[in-house]
Amino acid sequence: MRIALVSEHASPLAVLGGVDAGGQNVHVAALATALGAEGHVVDVYTRRDDPHLQDRIPFAPNVTVVPVTAGPAAVVPKDDLLPLMGEFADRLTEAWLADRPDVVHGHFWMSGLAALDAAGRVDLELGDHLPVAQTFHALGVVKRRQQGARDTSPAARAFLEPSVARRADVVIATCSDEAFELKGFGVPPARMAVVPCGVDALHFSPEGDVAPRTERLRLLTVSRLVPRKGVGNAIEALGHLVRRGVDAELVIVGGAGDADHLEDEPEIERLQRIVAEQGLQDRVVLAGSIEHDDLPAWYRSADVVVCAPWYEPFGIVPLEAMACGRPVVATRVGGLIDTVVEDSTGLHVPPRDPEALADALEGLLGDPERRRRYGENGRRRAATRYTWRRIGSDTARTYERLTARAGVAERRTSGA
Ligand code: UDP
Image 1 (tube, rainbow, N blue to C red):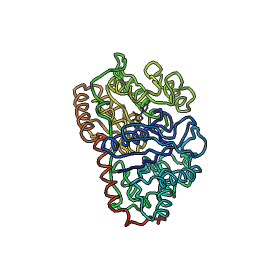
Image 2 (cartoon, helix red, strand yellow):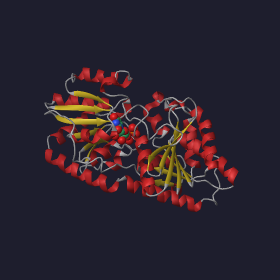
Image 3 (spheres, helix red, strand yellow):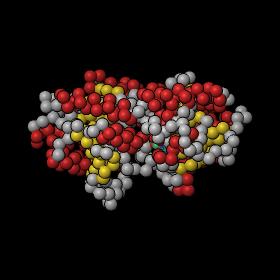
Image 4 (spheres, rainbow, N blue to C red):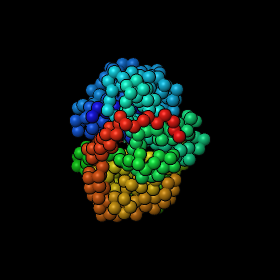
């Protein structure tokens, strides 16, 4: 198959850990690579954010990244990209009229908007039906529920996102919690599939280099530094632990730059304030953004990996931790409900509850045998159920069902 992946803000080429560069970038890069390895030909369309990028950039066998010129060739925050999506769709239309893919897969709601717009125009021109699959990665309705007025998404997301869900030929949810939300949009179960994100279990493995560590029990968080990731709660939980006499430390990986260039970020200031309030200056390390390739050594250096988001559409980090054989203490939200298995690969705690987090951590830190068992189970689970190879072939099967139907289907032109 010839597959067009559309990922307007999340390029496979991006540096990870910044505000807008995380799991979606990893997902799109790994899915494209897995599909390419199966022999499919994949073009990944992403907005040009650098004038020096070539027009077509080979990324992996059978995979090419295609920067799309829409708006300034510079970094633009993702919440400011909506006005550029018309231009983005124009460029997609031109590309697909010149060379029609068999299937299109939009990632994030704005990509879906542009992809459906372009596919509709291609249909009209060619008298055919170009099928569009859609993965949201995050849902505005959940974000709004959690963040209220602090949500900086464009207001139009509230009606455009459900309309993308209803117009796509199939919506690929990444976890059961998301599928439930999508049902609320009016997406019929027949047009929904659940395919999780994956993990590179060869790269993320228990054996290999270990980042330098101290004698203290080490907790680790890996995330973009935005409040909803709950890193502040992890710091507060460490405060409880230390007050209870547990000799632990917390390493925080993530941020827009390396450890020496973190000060510009607003979230850093907030986290540093919490560290100071808790008197934990000598027990919290802000490690900055770590190259994805170097991350396994950091996971291996941890006794427990903490994932404490207030909500989480999927969450690749717990899978990476599990693949490295590390126990995970995670909030019981979104994708983490599916990936982390209670008392098998880790523990679940309620979100925004540092004390409950500390309780779970205290028990686990005091029980090396249970940590080892959770780690082993996690490794097995990640390396069997969540390989990108498996996710790639499940996704390809979903596309095949669409291409078999294409030609007879009519483009749904409204969100009704
Ligand atoms: N990541 C990274 N370096 C960092 C911080 C994060 O490589 O310094 C990667 C991390 O390994 C994971 C992704 O960014 O693969 C984050 O994905 P997740 O789904 O956990 O969260 P999201 O960013 O999508 O909210």
